[in-house]
Image (cartoon, rainbow, N blue to C red):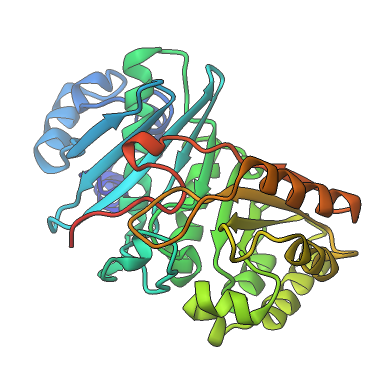
Length: 335
């Protein structure tokens, strides 16, 4: 698996432009082997091929409609992670990126949350997920590129803050992946320290907070971390973020039948978010092995209408890849 820093260190003995050539070849042209990097001398390519193989060990599963693909990556220590590609249009392809192996948060509605937490992913392991999909797209259409990233895969990004931010800087680098900061979203269950730290970063990435309930009583049932980070503590951090950045915050709200989808809960959510620079992404529950149910289409629409009536901007997120267990909350691998 490609090791970003090992290759960069190795090329320090070469002219500076060699590293720039390598970055363009790997992150923009999405080469799969060093022999494709014809801007490099043959001798150097041979040495790089011997010391730093570019292969990514992954099994890929495609949805029936071919718009979603899930990759199961085997890492160098034989641990496994999942990552997802969502093809919205020929010119818009979103990669759902994982930040950890497993997840320590333990949300009751999420398959990843039921896994054993193993460790944080390294920067290179984060980068390799996007390399995988860049190469995948290139094989199918040479003009199709990864355009958007969402850190909404396995794990809590803000519990791997330093590696995630350093990876984002590489994704955003014009001479690297060249993915615009505003096309990168980082989702958190609500780690206040992470929200405040992100506010201080010179990055215009999008912040998404997975709220899922307007009251602590309901949220604690769904998100065990709510006992440590109750809603008001999270909202205080969000207010700091908005004041510091003047950027809109996205609140993710997973609708679960009979638990958090009533008109009363919509009213309470409206009150909680009122007068804040934000929007709500409503997500219908994607079935997993957990004991929850999907709300009816009418109930989802009613919830949405209540929010809109109260002046809250709302988007209903479309589900991708349910048939291959690639939708929100469905990622999981055997420990």
